[in-house]
Image (cartoon, rainbow, N blue to C red; front, side):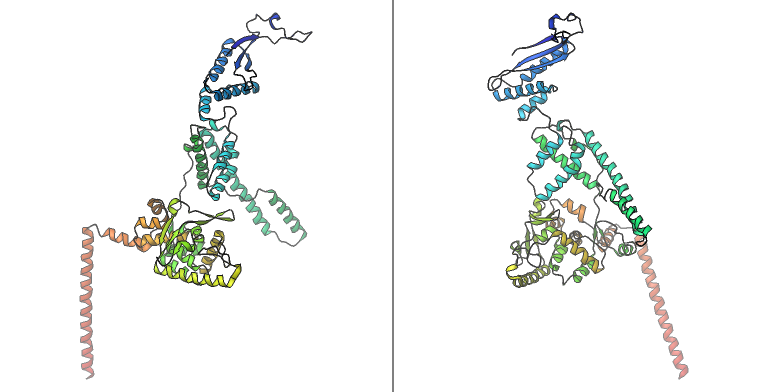
Length: 536
């Protein structure tokens, strides 16, 4: 197709206002005119002509370079690909009309092969919206992704072009989040101090009322209490972005995932600790928990179950404490998957909380689909619970909600997982036992199974873990007596001369003590005999 470079003079006749063109007296001056290019483009589908035109080049070399660039772009679409020819022509026509920079040849080639838009630049925000719209996962998972996108990703990097997103941009984003944390903590401290000061101002008196009014106005003007973005949340933000960019790579929109290479602070998962006597004593003095994850001893677990023996949901506390079901799994367990005659139940679903709404969902992972064996006592507890539920159903009559679940509200409707947590916390507080979370009952079940020398694979399968390493890393809290037994068993494996000498000394001391006791007893008998002889 025809294309050319040419010189152009923009000088105008002062009288007529028309361009002088070749009549300009300065036209032959070396730096007076500029260069322009024009390239004929494939006609539109209706046959009308179109072209690429651009001017303002200071020299012929620059003009010729852009003309070659345009021709290279035109050469990307073969003659036998009419659709590709039209796409490239439309792109060049828009670039010309909008005076946009010429797109990179290789990038355009990749987009053309991938069937992507050749014009326009997809931003991170636009891609994240498209990615979220295409996700087909449970509602709670979508909500977590949506929160990361709305609160963090869009405000910080949403304006950037997706194909130009770099690791440095993400590092800057996480630095900004950390800086915002410091500001939030400072603002929270200021608001807390103001609230505490307000509490000290008396209610009575004109002066006091005026001061309270002014203080309340100042508090209302302050930012509300906010939570900081902790390490775990930052890791989740990174994971969300990484997943979305991986999908963009899969669709050949980009070729590099910067989220896979940005470094942020690691998350240290809290280790479960057992409520030993020493820790309980310190908690009673200070009110502080040694770890966010605490586990009861077998005696404490027994004390709690005895305390809640008459609670309507006792069977659920019992099941979680011994078999380690998750809260949502227990709330969503149906009778149809609970076979008490065969001493087993099958976990096939759960109730999940999204905000305050509750939805039925599949288990958390594929390994969450599992068969859980039941002991005789747990079966007895569940049978008693079923009888009580049948009695409740008869009492409610037509108002009974037939959900078919094992654990329900009084009318048979779903249990709200959040309310279950609240109830558990109230029961623990009333029992006087050291505090644990509802989920910590699951930790305790795992700990009890491991302490009973149950094979780690069986424990992992019972809990619904995909890997035994998860069980070891998260749930293996060693009970004090188990650790002592293990220590003694280990020590006995190593023969030490010092230990033999100590044992010999202990034996000698025992013999000496025995000999002394006999001598003392013999002397006592002689003394009694003498006293008896004197009396006689």
